[in-house]
Image 1 (cartoon, rainbow, N blue to C red):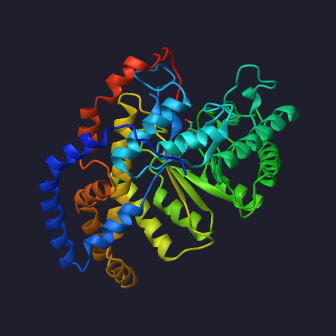
Image 2: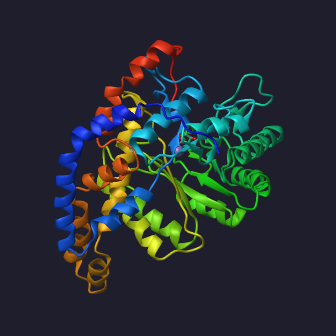
Length: 432
Ligand code: PSV
Ligand code: MN
């Protein structure tokens, strides 16, 4: 067993919590009385929230950018070791992000057993492995400019397959059991590639990756409507994703990134559909207003996030085919401190989960069956309107986290201290 040494002083957290404890006790008791009137035991809710977790992306620990510019901040992490440290801060204060999802080759090291131990010493484990065949790397034999798994060039497809197999091997050493595959393959011009044959190439190559999965692994297919390809993308929507997953086999599931849909698409319905066919594999949580904006989860449309969790709670009550979706944040923190964004996002995600748990399912189902539209809607609205913050804060505090994570984080002076120690990130552009 690896001994854990967490980055923030436990005394600092205890002092901050001591200041906030009385107010929390009051708020928790008041909410408990309110929920009790609806027959809900707040402590049971607390147990569910305490058991909830969402993974954070290693790349989310750094400042993101757009294709125009990136504005680094002092003290930003520059390698996987520093990223793990920052992720440990998030989990220590928030206590609901115990796993990190790495991206390769971005997070490449020479010794993955040591990396796993390093993470464990910070109280962290690893989540889904993300492969990267959307960028060329220095010294790479074949360019992905023609695509990767769907490339017209056989040697490039082979290289992309081999990279994914290498990711599985790395993941085995890190203790992961999921490989997330998102490819940027597509075209910018009508006629550039044959739309049918390019999908055949993708399916053939993806089958080679699938064949290399250990028996307890899943391959999560992440679809995305556009970008980097602006005319056609190979796995552009949930339809293409589920067809590919069905063709590949039972270990292939679909991953829903909230930003990867056409505007105004009913994402909660997609979630229900994927679950109906036993193909809901996981999520990349973020928010958007215009496209794949990668904004903080729930910052634009928290109601949508709640409706997604409402479907997930329904799905849990009616499980199909090993319902175990993986939850992960996938955001680009262009203007905030990534630690603060992920603390805030993880809290928003857990809040939407908690609100979905509060829905009076009996009342909802009765109203649905009786075609009482208004009461069905009100069953959702009543739960959505509840401020569940005291439950989340109590769950954090009882696990050793901070009642007020953002204030405690700022009080810790983590970023200014890291600014003294870490190498500055260079200027540049690039979406991560
Ligand atoms: C693609 O936009 C994506 O959502 C995929 O999950 C990638 O792995 C990630 O973003 C890279 O930033
Ligand atoms: Mn994503």
